[in-house]
Image 1 (cartoon, rainbow, N blue to C red):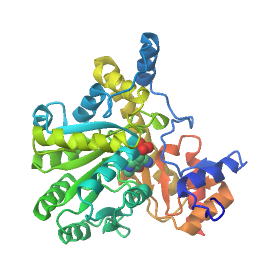
Image 2: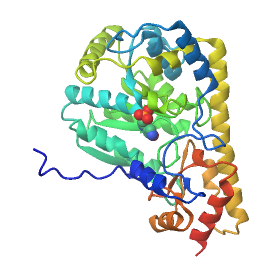
Image 3: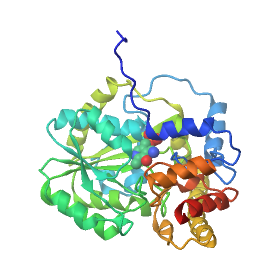
Length: 398
Ligand code: PMP
């Protein structure tokens, strides 16, 4: 049965990792993958997570099945982070949350549920977007199209283009929005623009799906929830996928959640019953460990404080790398202005480096980046910053 099976294309970013791992140069740097590394180039194990894990190990709880939608304590904690703990929507029982296998798993459950709910709707993602958005929604059976987003000339958002496109869509269209720290561009909407997006969604009857993969990586937990809060204040119904891969440095534990904001408690009950059906036929119920750690950290005032400090530390280090890179490139005598890198938010920067320049960085310096020119600032550190700046200078000057 496998004789005619074709080789599937390599994932562009995971493929990059394979080439990086095979590179024997000791100075090599991987700016491709979206993972936060500390100044020593290591993925941190947060102290708050370690403390929660040690307490759990000591308590040695049994490992029965979780409910289909996962841990109630975890799901409650997710809602509080997204909507604020005093949210009237939470108090009214209008919000449902299901623990999911990372942000990807949350998007997948949401996509499968939406396909049952609105089989003929079209899905719109930003141009460009995280490459898995298209694949996830296409594999759920949707036609996926782009709305204008990045403006290479201003290195910001083409908001007029985005808004005009959203205004032209059919009612019921599903709009995937990066809630903060846009991947791959680092260009986010302003608070006022978010309000305009909310108004367009209301006027056109669109279905917003906010992807929140980096809460706390731009300005802070509440500040980064501005889009979610604008939608929650609007009275609209919408979807949110959350990921704790980055904010808790729990990548491989697969900790995420799908939340759906409905019109009433009664509606929420019906929606949850359908989301549970999707989960049951995918993987039955989520794993315990990662979600339990996040719930333990978020429900303990001491551990939560510790986590917030560590999260701020990651955020500040990325910012310092942004400033440091811009200065180091300038110090190399590069005339081109890279100061936009400081304005971009989250882990990534669209540097404007061409595919050919990215290729040269790899060949001549062993520095790996995505061919679109996206680099991960969280892979820079005080030891490799100078080297990367030199490489950027070399490929942009000549
Ligand atoms: N959405 C976006 C925009 C992302 O950048 C990522 C991770 N790179 C995800 C979702 C998926 O997160 P997870 O690793 O938790 O599945």
